Length: 482
Image (cartoon, rainbow, N blue to C red; front, side, top):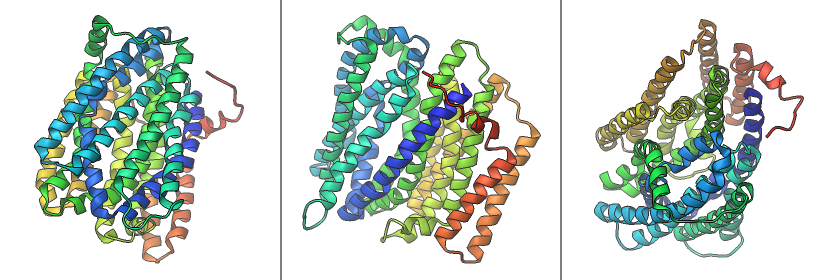
């Protein structure tokens, strides 16, 4: 299973590194530049709002389904046929909830029109994720990897034409960007549906109230977990927009730093996407999850610590790679946000393990605490620090959640951390900090410093054991595995 994890991780990383960074920094960031920081900030706040009640679209079905299909693949046709009909009603419930929340928060007119497009997009994205859960659950990781980038490939093509392939005077209409997403997501959803239908041996959607109630009852703990996590992960932009006189601008400044953090965070999300079906099958077969967990944690720490150190030391340089306005304000926020990457990726490992084991009650208690902590910190820190205050609230919350989930998983599965591993991690971090400080003090060119730090990270990770040489060697004699 460790070898399968490394093989499929390599595939999904290559695909996503080829596509998603270009989309985020070439397309999404260019849209912000062309549309204006304030306009994009309003869009980012509405997008965050659409995420907050996103759980009503799914009610935990996707995560429950990934775990269930990994353990009972033969039930795919029956479950997909029944769940597709139920999700149509959930889409209506979600839409009503979103517009009611938007009205209460004071959104009107054109803001609601833009929100309507974003609501449609969320329905399509949620559908894609559910369909992909069937493919990943059946251990078809290569197909799932291709689907994970298809929408972005389509969106890159559409937006590239809108941005550079036609003449348009004035600011770029943000609604064009939203509609482009609709086309890309819709196409991907249709392709995913065809793949699932083929894998399941045909589909026959049906409305079965008893079946739907049974599925929702089993998936409710997953739904509550996603809802609570969405609140402490997505409230920052909405609170900035609503709490401050220049809320649109502050949300846009925060979005500049958050975009880079989210770009890296996608890589962590890929870990969770691979680990959940693997953990679920291993736990069903009563296999030891410690080796896979240790491998995943070492890989995560090797990558995230390097990214966080580089991002915090060279925050202004990173922001200026893509932006020309407000970088002096977005850089400090990014320098803090990038350390969230470490905490979030740790939760992707241990939270996914606890999810696969069905320990949702503990995870929900932790997530509820994280939500209260994050919202409380935002109320205190946003009026004082604006975008930077929101970044600190996020870092404190994500750090607390990572530590809590790690401790719970370690106690449940009796994980032992060798002192040698702790020492190696400390040496690796000190090495990165020392080299970064030295390069910064010497005024070394950013690109040269980036190359030097990347080499330092690889050599340091290999020397301290964070990068498992044996595991990497096992990839050489590749065999085709399902």
